[in-house]
Image (tube, rainbow, N blue to C red; front, side, top):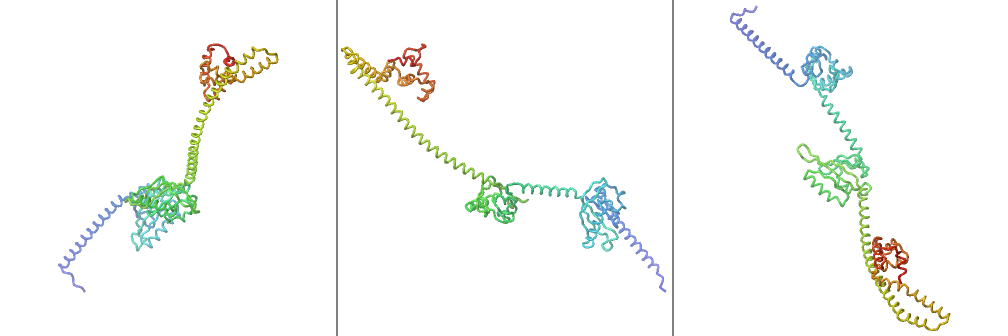
Amino acid sequence: MSAKPTYKELVKRIRNLEHEALEHKQIEKTLQESEAALRRILQVVPIGFGVVCDRVIRDANERFCALLGYSKEEILGNSAKMLYLTDEDFEYVGREKYLQIHDKGMGEIETSLRTKDGNVIDVILRSAPIDPKDLSVGAIFTVRDVTDLKQSERDLRKSERNYRLLVESTPDWVWICDEEGRQTFSNSAVKQILGYEVHEILGVTAHSLMHPEDRERIQKWFQKAKNQKRGWRGSVIRWLHKDKSIRFLETIAEPILDAKGNLSGFIGIDRDVTARIESEEVLQKAHDELKKRTKDLEVRTKSLEELNTAMRFLLKKRESDKAKIGEYVLANVKKLIEPNFEKIKKTKLNDQQKTLLRIVESNLNEIISPFTQEVSLKYFNLTPTEIQIAKQIRYGYTTQNIAAFMNVSPRTVETHRKNIRRKIGIEGKKANLRSHLLSIN
């Protein structure tokens, strides 16, 4: 039988118990304060937060309730199944999440939940067990709304699809190269333009596909563009088709810069302008040929003008000589023949002789008539041009005929006609000019 504790021992035990009780109260107070602080934190965090046990919602912060549009009273104590679109989704998330918890100690899955008003939101659920050794105690979960992010991803994918559709539908060659000029992207138009499949040019330097005579120049040009971190536009480069024929491509490109402004490559569009260049070459050749022919024609025209000038001079000289000959013939006839005719007429002639004399005189007058008419016209002080026009009027030519023959305007001929009428004395009279000219002897 143990001895009874002494008074001092009892006092000591009591004091130890009082001390333990005080420590317990302090610990309990600290735990309560920590729990209150944790709850305050959970209420203000920007993500949904809660506790489930056997997939029944036991606790949730205000953010979680706000995301789904429920009050705490409407959601606490209910199965999480009420938030899923289908029972299959509910079962799949539970199965997948707990497999991850078993393997990794935490589960994360992306799914969709239905809000109280029927809208669907995209979320990422994360769960961790309260006691990893006893999953029946429950789990803490977080819910992050990624609806906007998912919509942005969908919009981006749609934009990428549209961009790729646009890139693949354009007949121009769309390409991307790195800072060394190696092709890293190409649309299928390269097949139509250069004859290569896309996979055949990826990783290939662009200058190796260009015309050998242009490669060194293009490499220097490309290096300059790299140093200045700038693109180019409007330049035409000769490329070699897979079949070794030449293609002319008009190129436009812009530099690709990272967030720090470092050059990582270029993106560009090349258009096949071979048909245009060939047409321009044909047009230039035709222009040069036309220019040559025009020059030859100018030389020939000049030669013809010189010949024409010489011909006009000779014709003028001929007309002058003809006039002088006419005057000479007429003067000699008047001087040497006509006096003898008068003497013969005064002699005694028989009828046959008189008849023969009239015939000879008539023939002689017919022979010298043109000379007589021209000399007669000179007596009226007509100019050479007026005499020429008067002679053509005698022949019955119209003003239009004379203008065409003399290469002058009809108005000029009319002016000469007026001058002729004035000089021969029938200006203002109704006399016919041709008839009057024919009567002049």
